[in-house]
Amino acid sequence: MLTLFEKIAAVAAETARERGAFTLFAIMHRADAPDWWDLVVAAPWLDAEGMKDYRYFARKLGKFLDWDQTPRLSHVSILKLDNPVVRALLASRDLEVGKVCAINEPAGPVEFDKGFLVARKAMKLAAVEGRNGGIRAARIPSAKASRTKKAS
Image (cartoon, rainbow, N blue to C red):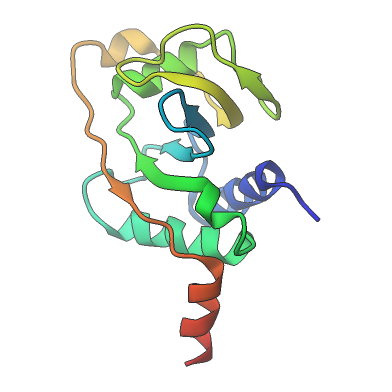
């Protein structure tokens, strides 16, 4: 059986083939939320304000994750490229692609204690200084609920 991290990497790979490359694709564990992970994504083609991309990720996660894995993800965060969290995670020396890593430095205004980085693309941070990015969240439906809807 594939682990949650391997399945998240498969979601990233399929999404990149279908829609384009990511600037950041990671699942992050918040220090204040035991047993919960956040999917954190950023790409120039993502819309952090509309619901279309949130629904896309909810469907994609429902397709790849087993019913017992979906409760481990608390929400999807689609961030703008100039968001302080994106800038901090792109600059982090603690994160390595393909490994669960402890985080010893702050990631902007959110405190993460570990993370699994699937994709990270370097970008000029000076070009995005001084602007604030938005964050919204969408609940991820369970795989069981997705299969029930498909059967109807």
